[in-house]
Image (cartoon, rainbow, N blue to C red):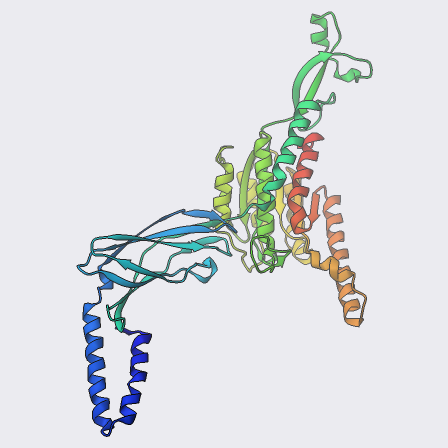
Length: 440
């Protein structure tokens, strides 16, 4: 049983006759009995909330930053009109609106209640209980009941770098269609034959084709298709730090490094699959957290986005030995391995650097890292002693980052170190440059 504000207001008004009555005790008891009878009558006439039958509908998934509507259908199977409120409860990160809605459902009828979710985190959102509050016709009292009505909405990565995809695809078409090369190298395949012109490299002459024709013929080559690209996402402790600005939220608190790495991986996956390459995905810290291998080009992005949706940073040190072993176990042929991690000197020295030669000896390796733009801002401060100290610490951090990047490059590893918004296009540009140069 619940009492409404109207009941409290009436009880407060009853203080006046009790105050002016010559027999206040008797007046108090009489008014109390009358109010109790009215509340009991109102409660008896209120519809039972347990007579409501619920079902759900709506989108089962949405991208982070996009609102999603969840429909709750309530059917009144009882003999009385239901008059009251319904509250469809969701976790706080779902930002469900409105919190509760007034409803009037006649006996045997159905009502649709729409709740809009504006989620602030990736992952699965599970509906909590639906609370139905039935109010009697006098508005004094009612009944309340809560019951679970299961529903799940999967919040996917937002893929904000999608805006860079058309320009990179245009460069890819230009590279493949307009720029055949005369020199054969790694990552190239035969394209076509054409007549020799002055200035062509004589090493590109196809002597057998020339012997069959009256003119000298040269071979042209193009970047090889059907190469393998393996995207490896480090989900260890260094991926938990928040950097940049969250473009999908009102509070500009920044995304974790993991989310920015996901965004860059999605752009590269979309670009590489359009280029005709096979793309695989692996998320790892101390163990494999998610994996997508062997997906078709048409289903690749959906599978990768679905695998990323449930990933969260693990507050443990990543096991680089196990990560490299997992890559070598799944990838037998030479491939481009893109490791999205942080250029943290201590973590790399103790983890990745000792086992990196095992990986780079067989595969082409790119390490992509998200740089914190606040470090650059701190390095410019000079107004007082505190800012000078912060600037010295920031400059030392940047020097350590440059030093570890230099060591990686000397070990034959390409490094892409960019701010959050620039990482995805920078990584895509590096992939296109390697493909144009025949380095894949």
